[in-house]
Image (cartoon, rainbow, N blue to C red; front, side):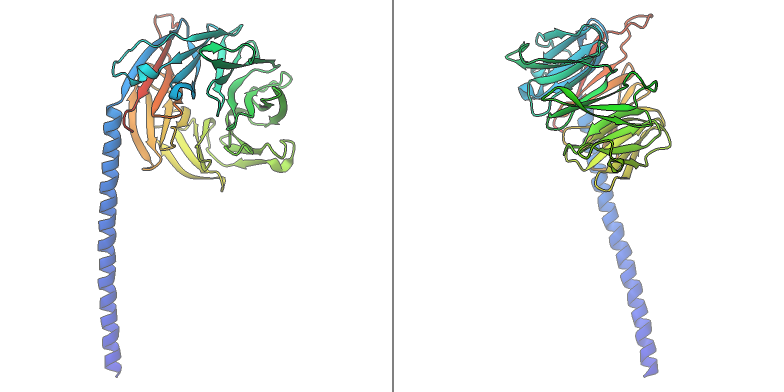
Length: 378
């Protein structure tokens, strides 16, 4: 009986080894299939990016400082602001659908600030409205209807602050910007929240750290700030910024953060900093969950595309890099003739508007050029 038991033990041991070998074999097959699928997808993306159409337009007499897309006309209206004080609205539907490299765009609607226009933000859920701000420390809301600036519905507010990163929240009920109150010598350590309906300040968020960028969450409960200490700060704006429990610090990078963006589903947000690292955070857990990196250069800006499948980023260099949130990997590098300074994805399709330091002479005067990278069938 004892010999039988020992025989059974030997048989069980052999069977376990066989099953283990089969598990390894199956795992290897699955890994191979996944690798093949990964390579197929990456090849697909590369082909689509290679088919991308690049276009350049002369928009202003001087350097363009800000851009954004309007939802009007199938999302093909681009707003441009320049240091020549002007704001122009362009109908690019014809030019984006054209296969020609440089198609002439429709004549723009034009309006002005008294000084350089530095910030533009279109209002969500509103096809014709947008905010602008200038060195004259004025914020203006414009409403474009029937290709005319509606002066009756325009609002204007003089503020005692420098205005940077002017942004609407998701439903257009509030907007915010980074600035300083004039009393504090430290730049950019205050975030100002305004009620859009009243066009009045309703809250100030004061941090000890300098704020580089911020985003509203899609529920309009919180703002997330990217700061120069390498951390992200979550602030509950519903409970009031003076509440001690309203602010939470989220560990990020050892280097200063320069940029932040949030996805359309309110599940994740991303940051970019001086170490060249793009960090993806889970909003519910308020923890980093994955990272992306192409090089060690300082990241200027990161941004999700309209369906959150692609992240575009610009660095201290003559290129734009694209990453896949599905493959968790670098997809493509688009090389540019000049250093990119600003990117803005279209809200409805894979069209990336971007600005570069386009120098026209040895004195480094900037031209008012705008660029588009159109990725067809993606």
